[in-house]
Length: 161
Image (cartoon, rainbow, N blue to C red):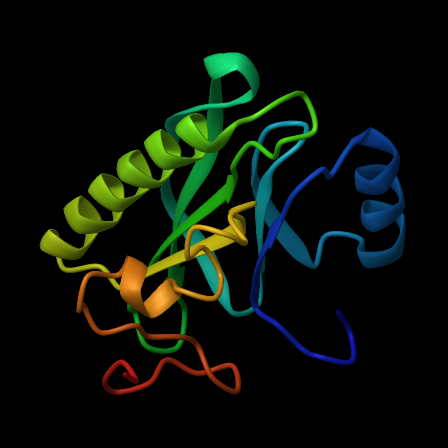
């Protein structure tokens, strides 16, 4: 991460051993919100957490898992963004396509809600959807909405399409 210089990151499968090493290496440089597996982190010198929530999605076997939603504020501009970090179920415990589809539907609803509130939204994570248009189809997934991203550590004046 040091060579890429991100200010906000979504981590999946971020267990206790990884968290301990991360904290030892980075000290208090990063703030975080999430659970033992999925975390949103941000550089404290660039962002401050305004509020947080979780998004309930179906995981293995349809059991509910809570995914972190963080609303950090960019200190220089005052802009609040929404970062949703998800880890949708893979097929490692049997077919999970129906749970992924339900997870994507719920995530789309949350993205629409946050956008309607005026927040730029960043959906990050592991969609585990190579066949159904997950990462390859992210523009299609957005249903024609403009897709924005942070560039060079600054918020763009308008989302890129």
